[in-house]
Length: 180
Image (cartoon, rainbow, N blue to C red; front, side, top):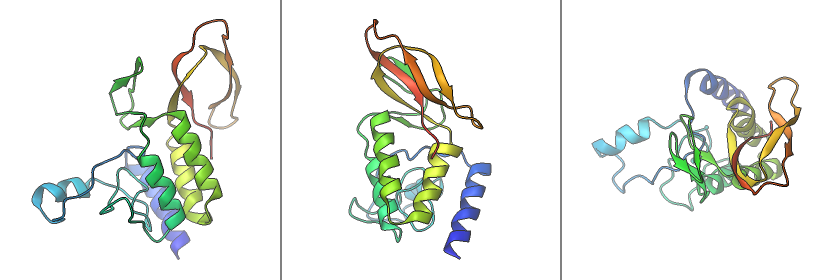
């Protein structure tokens, strides 16, 4: 039943919600039913069985995890990525035109590894496919300037391999995240 619940939730999420790519949102107050807090909490979409996988978190502290502990730990680490660009924000000479936060490629790659190594195969797979495949986000990193995309994925047309100009200085750029 939990698998079906997660599948239905993932499908609904993809059709109806602009996910904020696991954007970090500060913890709730100690008084969770304060009026100002209720608006913030109601705007969050979190995967069932987790407290950290979704747009923000509903945890009461960094040590709290949901029933899918390994998957949730991956999302918590991802949420705490120190290098991110908020929706419509700018950093490193890049502007994030998306309606959700984008993270450094280093954080996204660690997130992918963590989910693949998780013992929670069903929930980790759904979270991974939602974030990396359905959301079709990009990450950023400092690298040689991109000349062109050498290899694209068949269905989603995401760039899997880039050609770089190694004679020019490195700069921050957007990169497609690989499908999960």
